[in-house]
Amino acid sequence: MPFSFESFGKIPEGGRSLYFSLHGGGGAPPAINDRQWENQQRLYQLEEGIYLDDRQFTDNLLGNVLAVATTAGADAASRHRRAGWCR
Image 1 (spheres, rainbow, N blue to C red):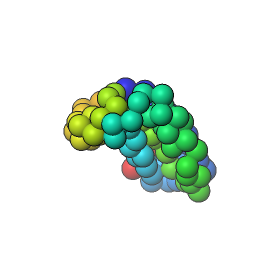
Image 2 (cartoon, rainbow, N blue to C red):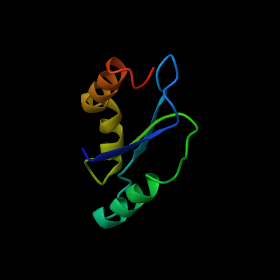
Image 3 (tube, rainbow, N blue to C red):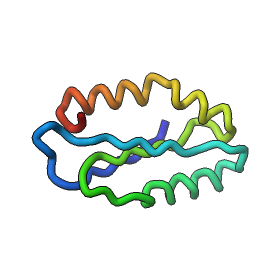
């Protein structure tokens, strides 16, 4: 699953906050979903934390539902937490 992330601010004593922005699907053609995902990467500027956004692996609504349940995102969040990058 393609994803991007950006870190903002200094790492607080308790570790970074982690913000997920899930995007994809909706039944649009892949080229439109790709452009929307690229836009999603620039939507938020945080004072502190890690902003993680993914490009869902399908271009339909079912892909959105499945992505929330995927272990890939949970595994990535767990690795970041253990590394002290987030709370």
